[in-house]
Image (cartoon, rainbow, N blue to C red; front, side):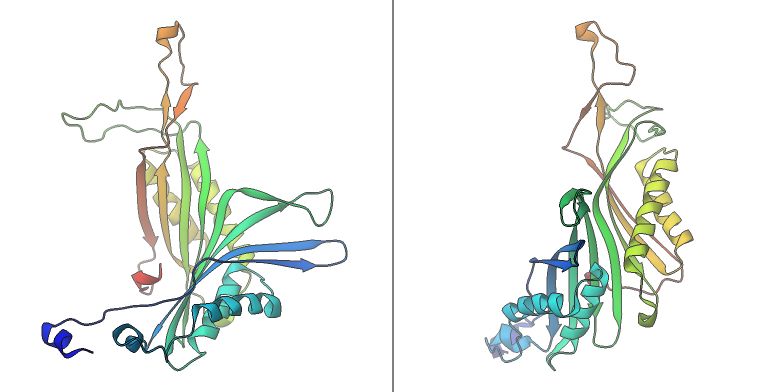
Length: 297
């Protein structure tokens, strides 16, 4: 480090680097039926890499192009069983691949396709929902966080909002019957031992169903209440999960005033506003949940 930096008390803080958003599509081919996995993979590595920042010495750097090539090679060599399993394979590999690399974080977004029933090889992209997974490996242990993004849901009744703070700037009327709509963005952390990790697709499907059932089945006085109920249900039903984080925008539906046109509106016609929106975020976790580094969420 430059002497002037040391004298000024300037030091290099936490850092990492990697290849982001590597798009890889893997087709598993059989005679009459194909399977498709469509992923965006992002890699971040950290370790003994101060020199590249301080002096430009690249001796400790595994190039991001190499990281990209590794993703493609692993897709061919190992296949892609699930987003979590593929992220684990890559994280284990990178964390132990070179002495200067101590930790690897692999984040995966999976884009879902539905099968067109006419053939065994035709697919249609499944809405906006995205499956996610993130694995952090420190060379000894792995942390797996599964998730989903943009799971858009709506209850046309069974939601209230009243009894809130009011001041000189409050104009929102109270309601005992409103539309509740949101796009669920959820992440959940697993606590199983590595030798117990299996069945990622079934686990993901189970959590997704619990989130949907709880959203639909909760009579809500606030989106915050619904958020907590969804996270609590996952922890109640899934002992291998210790923490659920949810981010849920309130997709406001405003009843349209039709009186100028001589029409009533018995809560049937709405304007769907996309901006601005309320954003509700929260974490539900077990009291004995092991700590997780914030940086890896």
